[in-house]
Image 1 (cartoon, rainbow, N blue to C red):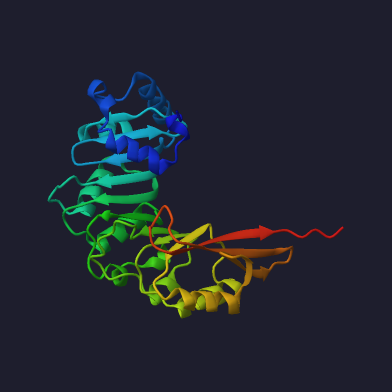
Image 2 (cartoon, rainbow, N blue to C red):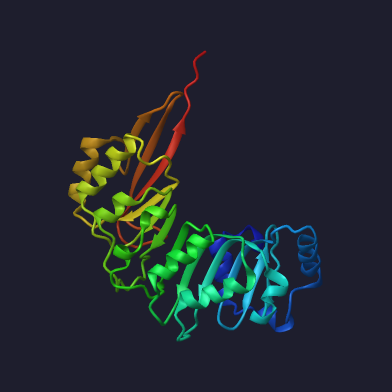
Length: 295
C-alpha cells in the first residue's frame, strides 16, 4: 500500500475528494501539530507553504508542504490559519452552488491574502465562469498554470477570450469532456509558449503541427516538458508529416533536433492509441537535452 505522501498531487486530491474527508468527522479544526507550524511561520513573517488546497463553498482542506496530514477548517477560520499562504495547487469545487465560481474564489482569496498560487484547478461549477475575472484573478496571484476539468462550465468562446500566451501550463478537454465550448484551433496553439499542454478534442490540422515543429527548431519555444495532444486530423497525414520533417526512431516514435552551443536538444514525438489523459489517438511530445563534450 502506497504512502499518501508518495502519490502524485492529482491523485492525492482525488483521494481527498472521493473519501469526503472521512477523517474530518473527528477533525473539526487543524491539528495541534499543524497549529504549531503555522504559528512559527506567522511569528517569523514567512508565507505558510501549502502543497495542496481543496476549496468548496462548505469548507477548506489543505496539506502543508512536506506533510501528508489533511487539515480542514471553516471559511470563518481562514484568516486565522491561512493568511499570506503560498499554495502549490488550489482545487476549486463549487458543488452545485449558484454562485459565479471566480467571484466566489476571489472572496476566498480576499480573506487570506495569498502571496502566490502556482497552479489553479477548476473542478466543477454549475454557473459559467467569467474569463476576464479568471485572468485577473490569476494575474493577481502570479499564477500561470491552469487545469480545467470537464465538469467546469466555461463560455462557448472560451479560447477566443482566454489569453493562452500568458499561460505556462494548460490542461483542458480530457476524455470525459462534453465539449460545450469551441475546441482549440491552430491560431490558439501557435500563441501558446508554455512547457506543458494537454489538449483533448481540437481543431488542429497537420499544417499546425508542421508549423509548431519549425518554430521549435527556430527557438520560439524554449522548453517542452510534455505536450499531450489528441489527433484531430487523419492519421495518414500525420505519418506523411513526420516522415518529411523528422527522423523515425521506432515504429511509433520520431525525433526532431536543434543545435545548441554545447550539444543539442531533441523533441521526442510518440504516437499512442490512447493515454491516461484521453482514450483517443494522441501525440505525446517531450524535449530532451543532449550534451556533447569535447575531450
